[in-house]
Each structure stands twice: as C-alpha cells, then as structure tokens.
Length: 101
Image (cartoon, rainbow, N blue to C red; front, side, top):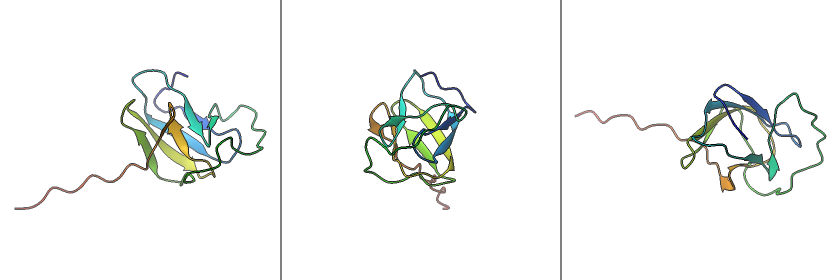
C-alpha cells in the first residue's frame, strides 16, 4: 500500500484512526491487530482482530517504524496493536533535552 504524508488510515475492525506524519521510504502494509488498515471512508464491518494480543493504540501518541521510516499519529484510540510489515510499531518517545553545562 502506498502511503502519503497527511493520509488518514482506519482499522476496519475497531475504532483506531491514524494520520500519517512521515511516509515510509517504500510501500508497506500497516496492520492493526493483524488486520490491514485502509481508508476511513471504506466499509468498517467490525468483527474483531485476527491477532488480539498486544497493546492497544492510544490517542495522541505517535507510533514509528525505524526500518521503513513510517510515523503515524493516533487520532482515535482502538483495541489493536499497530504493526508495519509485520514489525510491531512502538510508541515514539520524546527526544531528550540537551544537557546544560
């Protein structure tokens, strides 16, 4: 799936919605609980995730995949764990402040 900056993505089986902050360097598949995410306007039948394990998505948090360069912002929380090309996407931590001398 080709992903562009500013694109909105949604999980078809839970309430998770994402905004792409930084697109990946090559097309990748992004999943939420083992289900491929898609356009928020697509049909969202629900029904549960293929892989119910993992941490749920948290609203306002950024998730990143260092290998592909993908970074997304969670705009609606959901029950599924995010993954990019099969790799779990951890919450992006804050940059440490420079030390003062």
